[in-house]
Image (cartoon, rainbow, N blue to C red):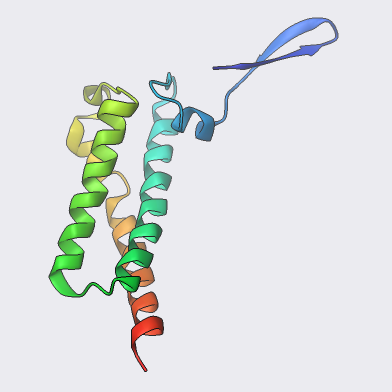
Length: 123
């Protein structure tokens, strides 16, 4: 949905922000890089949230790592297939979108999880 403004009596269309498109179902993504940026940053936010939750629970070991990978990949897969209804073949297939920014978010998750766990549970 584009925002329209009047400038000297003429309506001018302006671009919608990436974040408003990100939270609107079935948005039109003309720029592929813009959608990939949204996937990347949503993954980072999810990594922070899951890192905090894992630290509070307290979840330990390989169970936490596997759960993070499954939730991270699953949530984003559902987001781009069901919510945004993206044709993943335009982006190189579902694996390309699923791995976009995954390792960066995994690193961020580990940092948040370790620092949070240490702060809350080590005396």
